[in-house]
Image (cartoon, rainbow, N blue to C red):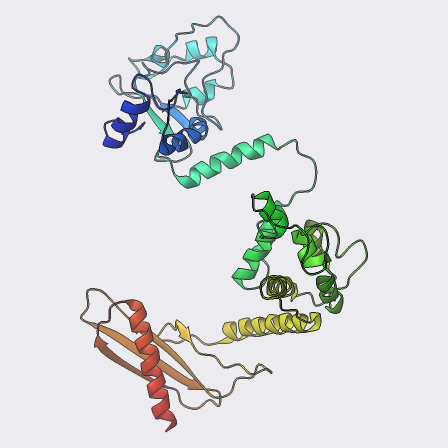
Length: 405
């Protein structure tokens, strides 16, 4: 509606809502549509990032329009001298040299604005002034730049805030050594996005806020994962020391801060993401299936899964890469003592929409360092890459059966 006013979209909305004005102004609308109300809700954000690019300067008001390229676009600031309210930017440009009239700049503008103005590019006398987005090089709005703009405003309005900050906790949750789904769950905990009863009631869902496992009057994230009786038993049985008043505490942020950074290095605290995850799974099993699980079994499962994942990472980094084939589908049989025995087969498929055939390949190796074997073939192209991957897996399995015979 701003940059392409001749488009059908812009014409429809203009004819309905802003015939004699522009979409940036606060317009009173009668019976507005959902789409128009949604557009209007973003008007304040758009205004923060809009800047008028100087062409001829004839349509830009020096004291009203956002043409100064500061952190947020804004009008110019006066140095306190008598000013002309109707002054246009074109009056500040010397058209013989096509540059700014520096004597006028020093005469009427705030000294801090003079370098900003003199750094602006001056367009040709017949070039129109345009509206652009300040936070991208192209001048076009993007979702990323809009989010960045709103974040700048949020930070600026909270500079005077004094107290604990959870930004570092949220950032560190993505660095914890565990599978991505567990990292995401840790972030959800810190962002208060976990659907416990307290959060559900805040979102208008009518449900009892009491704990179904221990009968506590309030069901919060911290209560579910650290203070509920089964959860306390699991943490007490784990290798992570529990200290009254320190861990577990009444604050979810203090508890995760303790697990992230405060546990002594001599203590094996590697498995805490899995412990948190399986406490949550056990809570769901009780709530939805009425299944009670023994705390010792939950802890044992969490520690076993943590150790298996840790061993898999060591094995993954120690493997030699396959020279001719990038393996996407891997079949692994890891025994409880993490020592692999037997054959290992890597399979892959090649699919290209413009080709008549698709390719299949497998590479087989064994743990006793016998000679490796491999095979490739092609088939008439399947419907999709996924079909080809399945065909490669089936063909590799058939070849392995033939090899065993």
